[in-house]
Amino acid sequence: MGIVEEAHNVRVLGSGEQTIVLAHGFGTDQSVWKHLVPHLIDSHRVVLYDNMGAGTTNPEFFDFQRYSTLEGYAYDLLTILEVLQIHSCILVGHSVSAVIGALASITRPDLFSKIIMISASPRYLNDVDYYGGFEQEDLDQLFEAMQSNYKAWCSGFAPLAVGGDMESVAVQEFSRTLFNMRPDIALSVAQTIFQSDVRSILCHVTTPCRIIQSMKDLAVPVVVAEYLHQNLGGESIVEVMSSDGHLPQLSSPDVVIPVLLRHIRHDIPV
Image: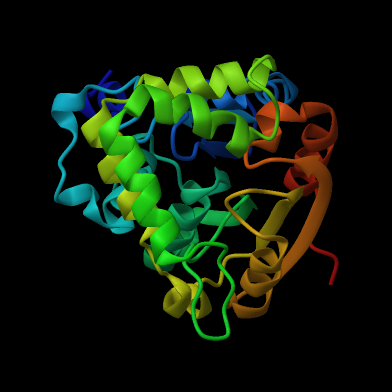
């Protein structure tokens, strides 16, 4: 295994003509896909990896300057595809990784046949004629809470993000992966994500996109999914699911997995 694969804990499972790359969001790692993977490996080649900064990666490899923008992560994704000699894939990106995939597809549209976006947002801050769900004051309070007592913040944030009480398995799982992150890295990653704004580049994304969204999501209002649909440069469709929370593939697999499989297997009707 080379340095890139080792740094990102890259795993390649299953076999098939089509390659599916699963990319996780903030505060999680590749384990967030545990309910989906078993449904794919008999028919597809499945690539899993961890974003730099995840608790499963070596914190010494985290370059604060490189990862102060989402482009740093997009270059990582392109490097992983290059090292694995993947010439075309379906990317399933959760949260920030859906945007990372979109950025990567602008540079190399030939590498992505389809992007499936789960709980994605091009901007979290409200703006004139745009509702992202957060005011700057909200984000400042969030960053302050992370800085003052990271463990306490994790315990409070996890059930809000997942949409459940602390007793649920999904909340406990998200709490675990969130707490595994080094606090200073978690704060830096959160600031990069929540302060990001990629609205201006959406028109350059020509890869077909499926926008999958929970009906209720603390981090991403449903109107954001429609905004993506209206502003992406290529074909796109939106599906709002009856699930609750920002990590529906973890908290509501019975609802979400069939939806994901349908979007993976079928193209957008012309």
